[in-house]
Image (cartoon, rainbow, N blue to C red):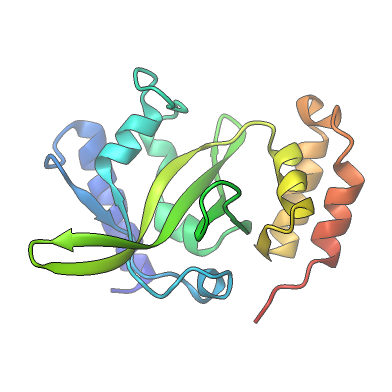
Length: 194
């Protein structure tokens, strides 16, 4: 299935989740990682996310939620496969953090992907790339700078990343940080690995 079909199917299933008609225990299939994601270190395995993960992250009643409207993650497969930036996870070895263009009230979504997750299906063990978290991230400019300075940056779409950094710099909440120039320079000088 190509990315457009995968994206359309995801959007249809997401609408079912919004309407409350999605079957219990549903797992979204987001296809395989794009060349960009593979070059950033995400293995060529299926990308999946459990509907319950999306429900819990978006619902303010759950602990560790980051409330957002489900409709705001429409086109998630496209957004993940055409990221702004990809980082190694600072907290979970082997996992990746994908910064997307999706937004909630002007705040950009990040997606945490656990790579090579072993999952048992009856007698067989399969490996997948499992989305463990998705949410809009506050203080993004400061966090991008911190991750870059820690050597975690694995991919940057220079045009998108520069535009994002410029936009965040104009946000009064982010201007207070002293990371603006260094973040611009890191994005400008970063070389994507082929």
